[in-house]
Image (cartoon, rainbow, N blue to C red; front, side, top):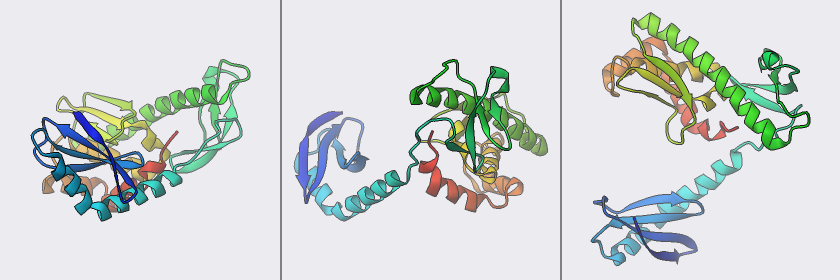
Length: 235
């Protein structure tokens, strides 16, 4: 992409960007402003006019983005602080041995090699623990749902992605964003049902959603919860 320049219209900062692959004009939020993306051969004046014609939409989106950013939890990453696991907030306690680390009914037990870990070390260790526990959780849930439907998967993996909560590859590999383990159990079960059903339907056809509903009747409500609250799932 080629940066044409930075501008301001009615106190809204925006950048004009030419993209060789783009065929239509588009708007993309970028921090506190917006990018106006135009085709390679499009005159700059069309990009400026496009932004001006859609300034109300841009303002609304920027306001919503600021509101969502304000809702993102802030953590100190210190022992004694509570963190969400499957929708419940549990206190973070220190484990004396690696074998004692894990999620319990009453607390999250975390082991760190450092005797007096700083916030960054606690955060790194906590993320590793969540990934380990989330992988075990998603494997168990996926195996259960796939067994009920008579389906098979090749592997289960967890990652941290920006745009997807889950993915099912054509090779039958189920991939989950481990941050979903912070959400309520019902939301986790919906996501598992969604991805496992993709083993049979690699699309979002009516047949796919019917299969999801057979496993998770409340999928619409839980899907909406993830859409409306996903930005809160941070660690």
